Length: 544
Image 1: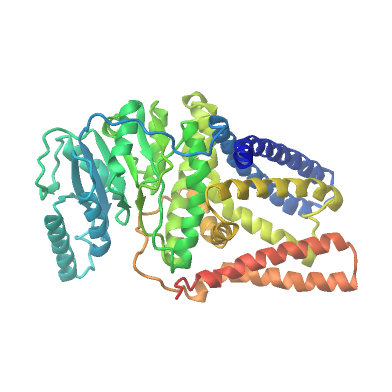
Image 2 (image 1 turned 180 degrees about the horizontal axis):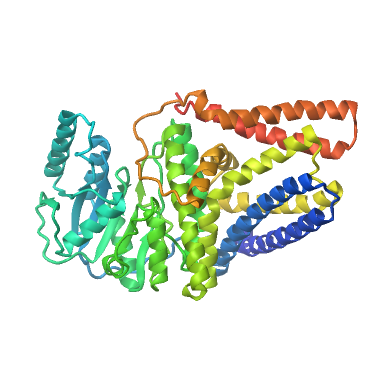
């Protein structure tokens, strides 16, 4: 009984801690801003200090967004742990198209996915493999490509999955749009369809379920999502989490999966409660009517899922998130694959931020303020690379050049920094612990994200100057170490941090003052050195 009473009171205590954390964020930001303007800096010191303040403001605002989502979740369910809730009953089985678009994915990976499609228990399903492989590219081995094409045909025939091809354009978004035209009867030159399924299509599909080539759904995947869509006619799509199953012996896959967990737990639930959830490209069900209404997937971005979500919300459609693991797949298995994935995501997301900003300035009433806020948070997330670089650079500059960007009044600074740090970490770790995650799990995801900073910096810079980029799949079935030349930014910054620690200790011994500032900056350099050194750990991803 005592344990039950404690559990019943925990959400209220957690909500109070979240409110206290949000207050500490604003108090800390206010003090930091006052110290910046009050400190007697030279002009060059002002530039560095402003960069640091901007980086801290970025972290604080995104932290505020995370804790605000927590409040929404706790307010929705004050007396019980947060779960997906009771799903509505399904009384009818409208036709559903289950599709996977593949660009020269390994046959073994695709075969596992299509087999899972075949084993889905939903009675009115139609299975489609959208082969988006480029067989006409110059320089390819024609015999090898012909053999691959034949393997795809044989696989679809053997499993009983319909096969669709078309004249290539627009990558994954273009392929799905062409498929939508095909099932709607709008056939065009270049469409090639082979009906390998024994189940005839007697009416047009009401829903479209999209998977990546390596995502394997559980047998009951379709029923629960169709039930949600049937109960909410204004829903354009329902997103479910991604779960990586190749984590047991692979460091990169494990850390990238844990990194995703932070997003797919409270952040997605909070966005869904505000009708601001965006599509993540796989493990998602769409209403075909909604796709027709917005003219299909956005083909202008390499993150077509995020861009299409904005189109849905702009036209008045809603979205939702079901926090249940309904499918499992493969995470990137080495740093090369992970960096390639993150570069594509960052380039597309920051590129869309320009679109979000333009749309907001032209018509701020198009979306509710809560939705704009969530889109701004999501669109700016990948600027985190610049933020990490600035946070790592500032203590190095202080220890070597005595540029006081990190401290104006250390005693006042820490009077407000320590409460914010303790509260935010306690709430962050405590809430994720409720979902079964340990500190060591979360730390792996944080470290992998941090060592990706040069990838995020490059992608966000290119996106802001208008470079669109091209779509590319994340390599699978390989675990290769990058040459050290590909890790120069991480190793160089780690070396600079270590050198700054040595120089700071030298200053502490021979100068002695200001001891507090020197010690704290040495500790920050040590923290960044440890994180950046982990790039060597992740560069050898396979564990015995």
